[in-house]
Length: 419
Figure 1: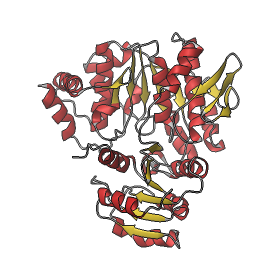
Figure 2: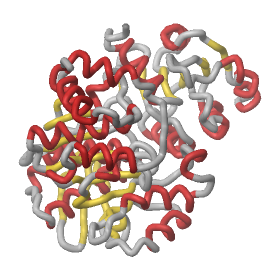
Figure 3: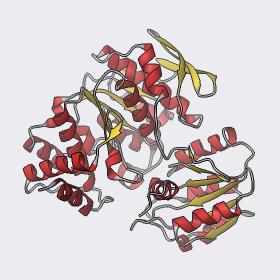
Figure 4: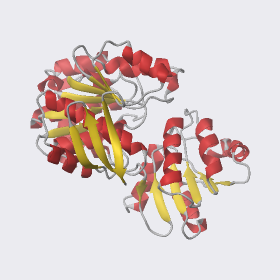
């Protein structure tokens, strides 16, 4: 199989297919000689913030080490999911690793995410990373990434998302996320709702809790001092926008500090330089211009709460013209109820994905949830973006939110990479 055929094989699998369970991945990895055991990992789960936390941790670690980073979903190209030392795998490298895995697995049948995860482990082992930063896809207990050899685990804030798979209470969702916990492996925890915290307390893991064991005191815009009982890192700067990134930075540094005690130390200068160099597109990402366009991957109620805080702090007082699209299987009413009244205009759009919700099916609901707000429908994401830009007043903000897939679609348009 050529590298080009490898890329085509992955692309032929339905990206949204979900099959919970570790058996298929573990069998595939065993067939490949268990590449995931050839390097240790920082394994990160959570509802929101896990991608940003992974990005900050990986950016700091590759100041000194060879680091793999595996995240999902991608925004524009699948290559974004696989990074070595901050650089996306190119088509030939990724396609070659896919081809090598598929040829060796033979009859194994894996989903898109399962195959992607196995390929990440295979490639990281092949190129000899010192360690990897691995973001879970869905949940934790039955997530394909849980096959990794975790040196440190981490759970970012828990909220309501993917309830059909993870449960309809915070306790149930936390229980699924806690499935990444392994005996003898420390667990770094962001601040959690009480119901979720009780679940993590019951795991018996060695917990490092935000607010109890470490904290980050803000001393200026996106700058602060990180403290634990054994270390202080001053003049820490994180470039990612939004007040929630303070928490993500605190948790990322706690992970880095714990990795330092387990064989991967960083100096304060390396840690500062790495966190300051973090790039994580599609999360309150500004494209400037007039009007300014901001993309944010808020796709659940907790994500919308974070977005609203950012609108009140980083973008205070500015009219907001929202481009919004969601998947049909999402419980989107809580998001709309919270976000739409904050906007001056809402344009509903479909997403270029079979799971997209038809805007016509909820435009009247949207108008009911946001009385006095102009709510309209566009029949393509590009048309919605152009309409929002055309009607947004000077000093206003065009905001794209509701789905990371929509963010990726319109990011490609803004970068001139749309197909």
